[in-house]
Image (cartoon, rainbow, N blue to C red; front, side, top):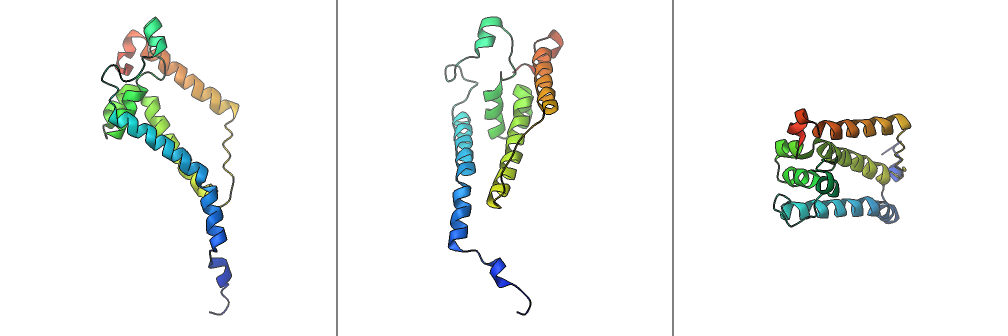
Length: 148
């Protein structure tokens, strides 16, 4: 072929090895998350005695922002999105955010670009405020629909 640089299309073994080496950390993180979700899928948090109780709930009777997270993960893995959202909606948003961020991380890493996640103060304050509002509302009488 005239005028086509075929060298730019070739992937050498060293290049493939370098890409695989760069993907080791994202792959390890995914393996850990899949392992955790597999365990929660197999060991039902709705049955007492398998997981420790939330210390805040035990001591004060108040639901923390993480209360219901294991039940939410169990329902999510089993495809029951409504139950997952009812048990802990922010956790479901967290699962989806993780999936998006992990995918971006893999694509950037495979291309040799660094993954930099640097949320600004506005983002962190917004996230903290939303979690605080969620926690307060789920503990008020009219927030009973947010109880896990």
